[in-house]
Every structure is written in C-alpha cells, then in structure tokens.
Amino acid sequence: MTDSLYTEEHQIFRDAFRKFVAKEITPNVEQWEADRAVPRDLWLKMGEQGYLCPWLPEEYGGLGLGFEYSVIINEELIRGDGFGVGVPLHSDVATPYVHSYATPEMKERWLPGCATGEVITSIGLTEPNAGSDLAAIRTTARRDGDSYVLNGQKTFITNGFFADLVVVAAKTDPKAGHRGVSLILVDKDAPGFHRGRRLEKMGYHMQDTAELFFEDCRVPASHLLGVEGAGFKYMMEKLQRERLEVCIKCQVNAEEALKEALSYAKVREAFGRPIGNFQYTAFRLAEMATDVELGRVFLDHLIRQHIEGNDITQQVSMAKYWLGEMVNRVAYQSLQIHGGYGYMEEYRICRISRDVRSLSIFAGTSEIMKLIVSRNLGLTPQ
Ligand SMILES: Cc1cc2nc3c(=O)[nH]c(=O)nc-3n(C[C@H](O)[C@H](O)[C@H](O)COP(=O)(O)OP(=O)(O)OC[C@H]3O[C@@H](n4cnc5c(N)ncnc54)[C@H](O)[C@@H]3O)c2cc1C
Image 1 (cartoon, rainbow, N blue to C red):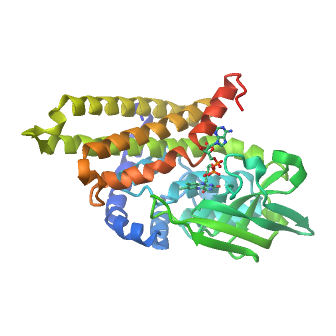
Image 2: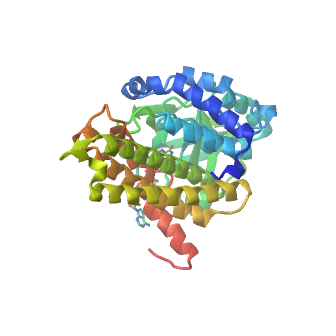
C-alpha cells in the first residue's frame, strides 16, 4: 500500500500485530501443520487483542476500524508463516454476511463471539457436484412452521471442522435456479448437522478444511439471512471483498517467495560464484521482481478503490486470476533457484510453494475470473 494510506496509527497497529505473530504464531507453525489445526486458544488470544473482525462496530465488541486493518492482519499473518490461520476467512468473508444480513437478534447473539474468538465462522457454498457453478447446488432448505429443514452436503469448507457458525447456501426454491438460493445460519449444535472428514490437502496444512452434512437439520426460521431467494445477490455483493482478501494472500506470498529466492541466490555458490551471479538466474530474479512489483501496484490500487466504496468487480476478477497465477510462477521459480534444498521441508519455500497452489482455485478459479472479465467486455464465452 502506498504510504499515504497508512497513518502512524496503522503503523503502530502493524508493529504490535507483527510482534504478536512472532510470539504466538511463527514458533508454532510446524506443530500446527502436523496437527492439521490451529488451537482455539490462538483465536481467543487474537480476540482479546482486537485482532478478530476489527471492523465490527463497537456495539458488537469490535473496534470499528477500516479495511486497512484487515489488510494489515492478513499481510502480517502471511509474513509470519500463519497463512493457514483461518482468521481472514472468519473476519473478512464469513462474519460480514452475519453483520450485513442477519436479524438484530441474531447479530446480538453471534457477533460479540466473532470478535472474541468464542465463535468461529465459515461459509459453505461448494458441494461435491457444484463448485464454480453455484446455481447447481443441491442442498435444500424447506420451510416448516417456524423452522427451516436443511438436507444436503458441502465440501472443501475452510474452518469447517471447528466452526461454531456456518453461513450455508441452500435452495429454498429448487425450481428457481439461482433465484431460489438463500443463505441460512447453521450453528454447530443444530440437530441434524454433522461434520465429515477433515480433508487431507496438498498444502495449507494447518487449515481445517472439512465436509459438512445436513440431515433433516432444523434451524429456527430467524436464521435466514436477509430475504428468501436473495442468497445469490448477497454472495455477489460480498465476493468483491472475499476476492480482494485472496489477492492479498497471493501478493504477500509472492513477495515472501521472492525474498527467499533472492537471499538464497546471494549465498549459494556453484562453479565458484553465487548462483545469483549467473545471468540466467539474475534475469529470472529480475522477471520475478517485476511481477511482484506490478502485483503490488495493482493490489494497492484495488484496496484503495475498495476503501473508497467503488465497484471493482471487474478489476478484482482480473487481479484474482493474475495474482493467483503470478504467485505460482514466482513460487515455482523460487523453489527452482533453491535446487534440491527447495524440496526439503526445512526450507520455507517448500511450504510456500505447496500452499499457494490453492490460490488460483478457491474463491473462484482463474477460469471463472476470466469468464467474468470477458462477460464484462461484452463477450459471451461458453
Ligand atoms: C483449500 C480450499 C479451501 C476452500 N474453501 C472453501 C470454503 O471455505 N467455502 C466454500 O464454499 N468453498 C471452498 N472451497 C471450494 C472452492 O471455492 C472450489 O473448489 C472452487 O470454486 C472450484 O470449484 P470445484 O472444485 O467444484 O471445481 P469445478 O467447478 O468442478 O471446476 C473444475 C475445473 O473446470 C473449470 N471450469 C468450470 N467451469 C468453467 C467454465 N465455465 N469455463 C472454463 N472453465 C471452467 C474450473 O476453472 C476448474 O479448472 C475451497 C477449496 C479449496 C481447494
């Protein structure tokens, strides 16, 4: 972000959070990766310090801060190797649905816990047969008196295993296509709600990613977010922020991968000289640095636009695909520059390379982003 967007207060917040990450997160990464989980204790500590949902108004236990603070938290988590901590998904993707669309009673019930860490949230859109094509979801929510009864299943759900509250997309009118999709809150104790496996993934190991099942799962009708049938519209409204959040992950991981490659290339010697002095390696690093620089300028521009309240659907779709692929290019080249050491767990680039592979897939694949961009260009690709 350019300097003018950061005040001294932002910098103080960043410094404090960086220290928190260095003390509470970085030393535990190896253990949490092995556990495939981040302990609840971390969430509570983050809540205590105001690092969860800092944008939430004070009446719900937040600090009422701007999006810049969410950016700082997301950036510093990645710099301190906490990429797999599911806090940005909780703070900036799932909880905003509750804040924007839940009834006043539901907000009072759930939001204070979202700020303290007693309530972890997740969002369940994807199903085994419907990922990119969300209108094809099969989970249904049938109104029955004062309740909704949900049947169906979700997969690949971030924070899914430990979530206390899930924003679930379900068809309240299965014949109405995307106009029949509604969003409904399901809490962990709802009868008929079960979690399946914690999924074994290629990377992103400390993140709990799970399957969710709804078998005649009954929740009060007041758990409906907004109005019936408007779920798709709400998702479109929130996707800009979600994709921007993923763009930050892409950019900071690319910066970290470049940093690793540069420092390694300066000290590793072959044929009597540092490998960074071979023109091939130096030029490759120059290309990577250019990619990273371009990404930073684009991302900061979009963050600023988002903070100013502008519609950046088209640009954020461009950024999600470009940055998602750029970070993979940079991580691949960085690992290559590390030679065999890059393939070893003790080198940071090994984990970064594994983790970033997910970034061109979740929150909308690169192909779906290009579909959105081309439609906005007046084209109708199939
Ligand atoms: C680590 C991880 C965490 C996730 N977290 C969540 C979460 O918290 N909540 C949630 O709901 N989901 C989550 N997801 C799911 C994610 O959003 C989906 O995987 C993604 O949207 C793609 O859906 P899919 O896997 O079903 O692939 P598909 O939709 O089956 O796509 C398969 C391939 O076909 C391509 N494709 C599909 N349609 C088109 C088209 N029209 N034109 C060109 N190409 C096309 C896709 O780009 C992709 O390459 C997560 C996924 C991962 C890997």
